[in-house]
Length: 256
Ligand code: PEP
Image (cartoon, rainbow, N blue to C red; front, side, top):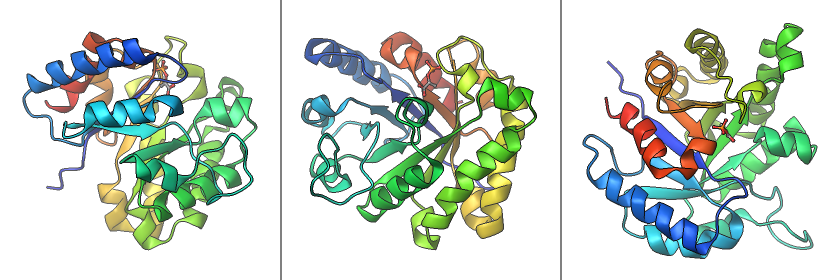
C-alpha cells in the first residue's frame, strides 16, 4: 500500500519579531526532538520575509524546514515590494505558499496570477503549496466544487508533468480560516477527494502521491479526526502555529 507523505506546515502570517521567533523556534525544535516518528522535512513554518535570514540560520541542519508566504510571478526587475523565487532559494527556502485566501481576497489575486506564481516557484526549484477554498457564500450557493476546481485548474494549466511533482495542495475553506469554525472531517474529505481526482485526470501516479493538507481552525482537539480521513495528508496551521505546544500537539497527529 502506498504511504503518502504527511506534512504539517505553520503559517505565521504577519506575526512575530526577532525575540518571539527565536523563542518559538527553540521550543519547536526541542519539542520535535522528543516526538517519535516525525520525518525530517515533514514539518515547516511559513515566515514573514524580513525574518528569512534569521529563521534560515536558526533552522540550519534541523528537521524543521522554512517556507515563504508568497512569491512573485516575475523573475527579477522593476517589481517594488515583491520577492523572487531565486531570492528565496538564496536562503535555502524549501517551499512557498501561493494563493492563500488572504492574498486572493485582500490583494485581489486571480487564479491565473496564483498559477503563474506556482510556475515560477517550481521553476526555481521550490516546492509550492497552493491554497484553494471557497467562501461561505460560495458554499451556501452550492459552488464549492466549481470554485476549487477553477482554482486548481488554473494551476494545472501552468505546471507540466515534472513540475507537478513539486506541488502540494491545501484545501482551506475561507469560512474556516481564523474563525474557530472547522470543516467537518466529512466535508473536508469530500473536497480533498475531488481535488485528488482532478489531478488524477492528468496523472494517476502524481495524484496518488500528492499531499493535500487541510487548513482552517485546526487545533490539537480536532487534528486527529481530520488527519484520519483517507485524503487528508496533514494540515496548514495558522493561529495554532504560533503556540509551540499547540503546534507540536498537531504535528504529533501525523506521526500516528
Ligand atoms: C491559515 O491561515 O492558513 C489558517 C489555516 O489559519 P487558522 O489555522 O488560524 O484558521
